[in-house]
Image 1 (tube, rainbow, N blue to C red):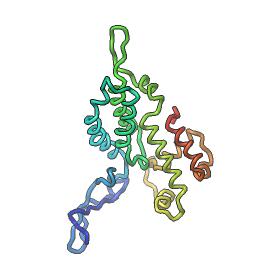
Image 2 (image 1 turned 180 degrees about the vertical axis):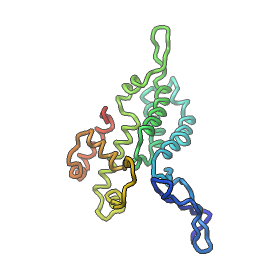
Image 3 (image 1 turned 45 degrees about the vertical axis):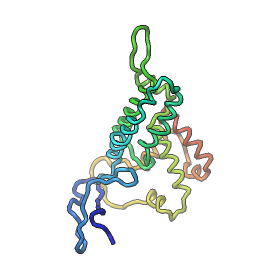
Amino acid sequence: MVNEKKTEYMTVSATQKGRQTQNWKLGDKVFESVSSFKYLGNVINEEGRSSECVKNKIQQTGNRIYAANHHMLKSKVIKRSVEMQIYKTLLRPVVTYGSQTWTLTKSDENLLRIFERKILRRIYGPLQEGDIRRIRNNEELNRSIKGEDTVKFIKAQRIRWLGHVERMEVRAMPRKMMEGRLFIGRRRGRPRARWMDDVAADLKVKKIKQWIEKTKDREQWGLVVEEAKARPAL
């Protein structure tokens, strides 16, 4: 039996015209139409974008975990290296959970970096220049973490996931979804970037050719992923 109070439905479309806003009636049951819902910790919306999920991860999840642990991140007793480990094991995984499937816009990347820099400034503290103490600028923070920021971490995770899916059986659902195509008329204007477009652009920056063959070697692909985390241009 389907519980109509616990069941919702949503149509995903790039245009308002293609979305259904009316509740769906099936027999004597009525299922509510929603514009977004949370599934396995990720927010999915009717536009099929990741932006709402990114904002939700930062505002509701990331800020809550940060507030609960900020006393450790500003402690003078705990070493800076340990504070960074706390950030990488407690905060970053929560904010980036499910990010393997995200398609990021420049605005999304900016929000993620702003959130991370807030934490890094807490960990590294201000700089003392003579009698003046000032906050560290973005370039100084980037040097402190050797360019291994959250956005590069997410892109590396997407590359890792790409290799994982490519090694699946051809009939596996994740691979069928990734390689599937809808043959319909394209709407006017610039087409929206797909997940595969994003990942392909990252691989192009890294000058990775014949990547399909490389994914079959798990160890070799693992080296590609690790390099992606720190590559300055990615």
